[in-house]
Structure formats: C-alpha cells, structure tokens
Image (cartoon, rainbow, N blue to C red; front, side):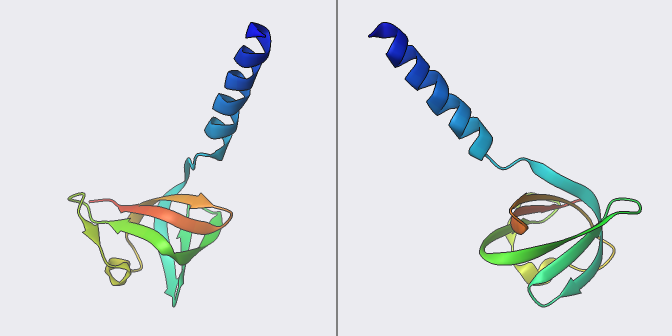
Length: 91
C-alpha cells in the first residue's frame, strides 16, 4: 500500500514538472505581425502566436500591453506549443 502511494506521488510530481512551461527563446524580435512575433536567436528564427493568455512584461517588470512589443527588442519567451505564455522584454 505504501509503495503504491509513493509511486503515485512520484508520478504526479513528474507529470507536473513536465507540464510546466520553461523559457524557450531568448533573442531579439525581428518581426511583429498581428498576433505573431518572430524571435531570432542568432541565426535561428522562431515564430510565436500571441494568445489571449499571453502576458507581456516591461523591463521594469510591469505587466503591459502587447502593443509594447516592437522589432529590435530583446526578449525572453516562455511558450506552450508555439503559443507565447509570457514575454519578458529586456532593458
């Protein structure tokens, strides 16, 4: 009984760890097109969709509008299946 409970807890913790969103891309915004941004990491471009749950944070750490994003900004993007969840704009 104890062994089953321990295995269940371990499995739940692993499932939670795998489901969390990790930093995906740190780079420079090369394009902003409607609800998508393209981020370049020195040769490799990645395009992210901005969803209704995408949070954008200014260099001061304040939650801001998506319209704050512009070409040339350094950003860190957390994404889930190509949809940006959080974008931190660097100073």
